[in-house]
Amino acid sequence: MAPGGRTTVPRSVPPDHLACAPYAPGRMTERVCENCGFGDEELASVRRVYVVPEAWDQPPKREVVDPPELWCIPCITQYPCEPVDAESGEED
Ligand SMILES: [Zn+2]
View 1 (cartoon, protein in one colour):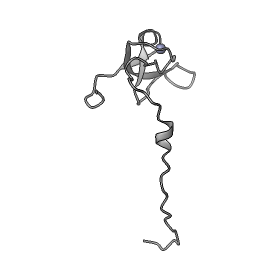
View 2 (cartoon, rainbow, N blue to C red):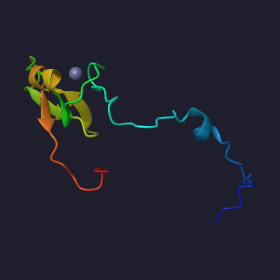
View 3 (cartoon, protein in one colour):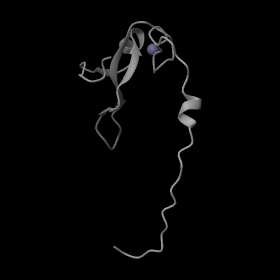
View 4 (cartoon, rainbow, N blue to C red):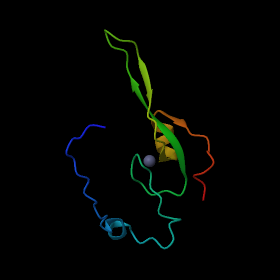
């Protein structure tokens, strides 16, 4: 423990999260695709895949983005992505 002369000031947490939380009585219908922003009932959890084409100095690469996103079916069929298996916990 180094005496750094650091004082921990207790910060009261402002109730910001209450203010900016949107009042959503029934958040069942308004789901939008996180790729194109289009509202769609049929969204699937996928992981976005960045495909890096082959270059003169590097082989082609496939990069899977970790936090899964909700995509609509057209986006899933048009853009590279990987389906996310339904994991327990997120289901409500
Ligand atoms: Zn979409």
